[in-house]
Length: 494
Image 1 (cartoon, rainbow, N blue to C red):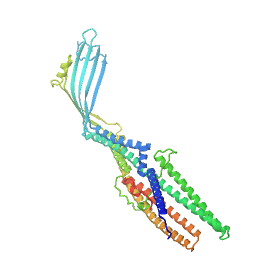
Image 2 (image 1 turned 120 degrees about the vertical axis):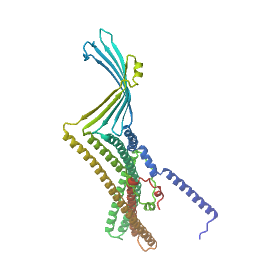
Image 3 (image 1 turned 45 degrees about the vertical axis):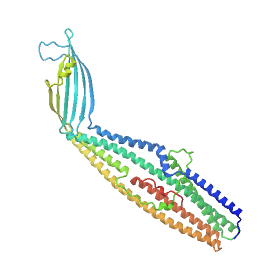
Image 4 (image 1 turned 120 degrees about the horizontal axis):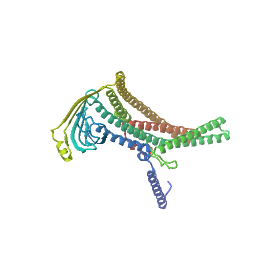
């Protein structure tokens, strides 16, 4: 063993320490510049206008659900009317002096409300000021004031408040459908962004693999070319090596183009500029990718299916409203008013609150279309639309289950390909290591080692491609389970 002096040992240890320090600083710098999936999705959420628009659409639609509460909520109303009447009055009694003009002012204020029974109620206070202008004689002016209660009860169309209840359901269901559609857009955008992240990460790695393959093909071509120049191999080997080299160049070019396309999609999702630099993406521990558990589907969790369910409910409610609208209308109307009349306003207001001179009314109103057959057919068509909406939703449920089965089958296939690719890669690695050992012992050729290196590189390409398919399929399945990204798959490659 060679003797090492203390000075040489110290120098050697100092060199190792400096090397470790530089490596540590480089690793820290790289870590600081690494863009994780979580960071990237945060950029997409903050910078993508479609994401922000869908987010606002969802918030707005959630707020619009409260519009349904207004159907059966009381509302305040006022009425002001000024009138002038100069027609000849029909006094109905001989000898009564006729007026030349009647001026009136009507003021009313109160509340109205529709109840779940279909009853429409009004409670208001009415104040009227009348001015009879006679021209040659003394004019007459007085006030009348009345608290009034009015009730309207549907007995056929909208009986029991059917149309009003459907209106409430339709309003809420439509707002819910809009909210779930926006939620579906949000989830789809994030899933596509995650897929573009993995696509760029794997594309960059595949470029490295293809670059290595081309270097190996170039080495084989150079090696065979030298042997051919020394007449140690047949010219056909050179032609074969040249063909392999050109194929490797084409593969590298394709991989480079795929990386450029992945980069464009990556930037587009986050609205990044063309000149913006994309930092290094987190490296994956491929063994951990292999160990990712299968997702568990929470049924009914897919946002677009929830949107379809709400839309079907809204369509069904609207159809029932149309069917109800085409029925004949028969309404019972009741009103009761207390009255006060005097030239003095203050006395009329107090007098109107007693029951000395009440006014009561009761009546029925009825209307039916002349073309009753058309109304009947229209009502039947509306009911068919309700059934059609329910059938469409049922099909959406079946499609959702079918899509889940298809995705899980694709995931299973991708996992199987990944496992096989690992087996092949390990076999190619073992074959290469064994051949390198044989080369050291002079029992094989450099050409054979270069060929085995190329086989090993191709196996790596297959493994990365299979893993990329697993990640892409898992991202699609998040539309069902809405799971966050799994940070456990990040880390150095083993």
